Image (cartoon, rainbow over all chains, first blue to last red; front, side, top):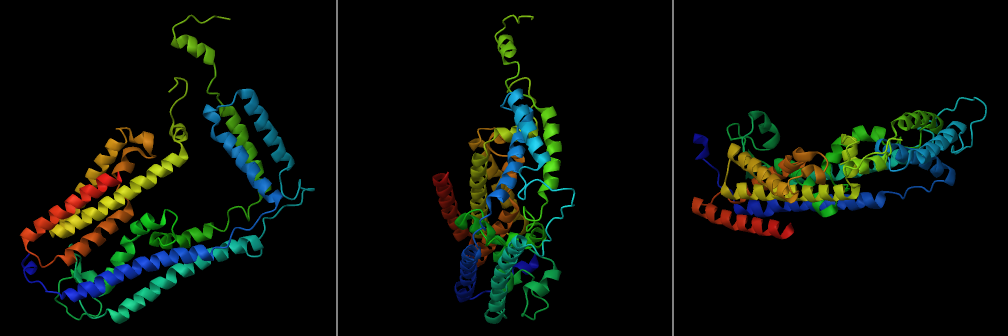
Length: 271
Length: 136
């Protein structure tokens, strides 16, 4: 701990003119990014009635299945709805192009040529661009203006490996890693301001940097929902699910009369 | 709870009303974020270093989860998905916020005497309890 007593004395102007401005700029740029993404997002395209009906039919059967094991509807109603849906899926009455003609194999539309899927992918890529450009600009700005001096002392120690990254521009091989340059303050802010964005911009904000890291993986999966899926196959799978849930179905009020009698200790009629 | 249905995790999830769960989750997130920020401020003002600062973070997390537990009337599973671990977990982003605020305040008050440290600590802690009390 002998290194502790030898400490640098920093000009307070450094604090006023570097520390707070960098933080302020990053907060404002984050808010700006969020609003730009909002403006850039095109409204979802209006789908024709058949397409929506197709999607809703699937959702309807899923809702029915969701409460199957403690269902609020009595068995007769459940079975009738379930069988009606099952039959409709088998006949293809809900498909957007009408029931399938003959046994021509239906191929799902190619995501690269289907215009609906392209829109989804373009939107994803646009948001990514908007996210990355301000970060690069700010890093360049910091490197240009705030280079070559020590900004702040970190309250916790780091290994020597971090020295090259955190003390960029300061050529001292002996100085404690805890004295860092402005770029490391940028990194600290980058990670630490997400919570603040969530506070002021609400949950679904576009300024979140943790989203940036996960988008390369999510963008590959994102264009898929609904556009490139073959609803015929989905309906067939849903039929199996419906059958399975029908087996599971159990009405919440089953034998309610017997249960009430039991609860109050009355004799149960045996017939 | 009727005797004929078993309380599976799925059933328990169904019994919670989704918009309420969401509201609870965002409120607890806000509380956790604010508590980690103020913990950072306290750590910085006190001039805590190394593991002492992180110990304060752990302490603040425990204090926050204790307060949340009281608000949940000792039944966390009733108010949010995930039970008690959800209460205690400070969230991965809040540790970065803690470090940010800690570094900020530590850097600001590097060159002051210990007595001034204590005075600032009292001011910050009074402000903290006041704000948290008003918010909740």
